[in-house]
Length: 475
Image 1: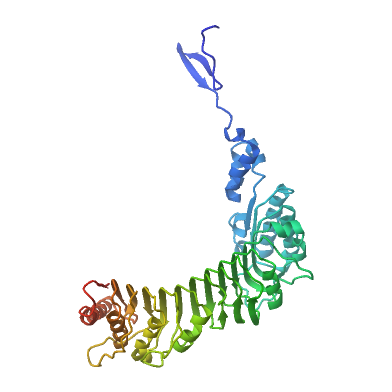
Image 2: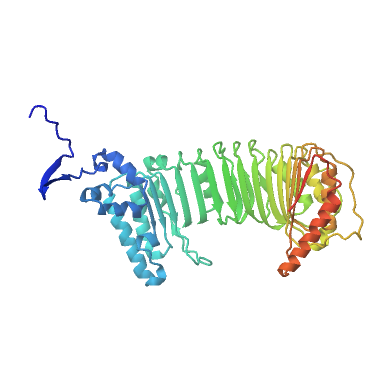
């Protein structure tokens, strides 16, 4: 009727109960389902596979939407209802895992999948299914591929999965891949390998590959930005003669190689773990951050005669190693770190070398622009009780040194000698922090007593020697 308000889409229905009207509001249809299909898929793609599957309980319509999920990540716990392999026979567990993965892939057949990840212990029976999943990756135009097949116990096992890399060599697939992570595999490159021209990230862990094939693989990844190689034993040089001008981050850990050499002019970060070996990154003119975690001994002479030449542009250096110190004085004519501003030394020094800690001043001398020094002493030393004389070295000014932080300070003679030398030659020093340590077995009262002695030694010998503008913090 004219003048009557028009009903909204959520119209009300009037009923009478006890002479009073009752309003019943119709529930509107799901607003999510009113969105375009590509937006629905985008929203659900941000959920995990398990969360996306739960949306089917909301409505029948949502069940059809959840079948498109461009980020697929499969692991045993998720795909087998949280069960572990110990809960049933490993064969039954593997069958359930394979069946559930295949069921998901069947629903995604012919659809785009951006991320594809499998995390499951490798067995020979799994190989044929892995081959099929690689074929799915190719058909689904995947950009980011990850296969983590490392068994819980892998020592002595050589039955790694042989990657059917020929399946990935379709030109559309190779140009599409952006990230590859492979664990517990064998890689053998076929003839006329063209590589992955748009790959940005490559992560190899426990991979069997020859040095020649690895070099060829890297030379074909001209746009790679991040490279990680862990426990890949080449028994040869690890090098990339072909320029990797886009490589920014390089991580190498526990690989049996004879030398590391990369032509990566724009490299910014280098992290190495393992035994010391020759490293040549001299062409990396933009390398700023270097972290070396060494499992063996490295002498002061070796460090200061090899690091500056191998890492000429480093600004921030972390070195963790066992460090035998053979002399109490400065190393003669050390090469210079021309750009080094921060150095963190985490050193294991045996008791017999405490009297030679003063020689660590050679690191300061080799870094004329040093601004911050962190020292971490990881061994026991006897506090200085005044019986031994405190030796000195000729003056060597460190005009830019502003911050010294010593962890594991025990107030030993060698530690005091080094710190007094550093303090007296650092006119711009702003903060000196001493963090006492008690590494031997003792009860709480004994530890407290020992730390208090160390604090008093630090304050006594350094408190009067620091400049009035320097803040002394004894924790």
